[in-house]
Image 1 (tube, rainbow, N blue to C red):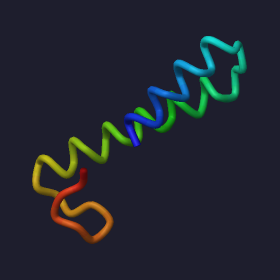
Image 2 (cartoon, one colour):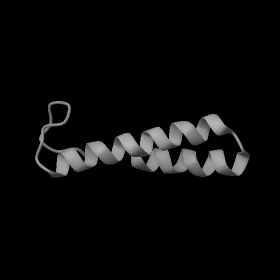
Image 3 (cartoon, rainbow, N blue to C red):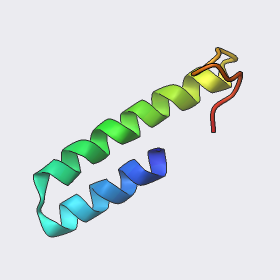
Length: 51
């Protein structure tokens, strides 16, 4: 999810499409939060770890 967010950020920045930029930021932040929660040992979506 983080990688997809970064790709959308880059594509949105290069093409000037602001909706891609916004979706990229949201995906990167949500992915980072899920990654941090998973690495701390909290169950994320029923799983003990989240990649």
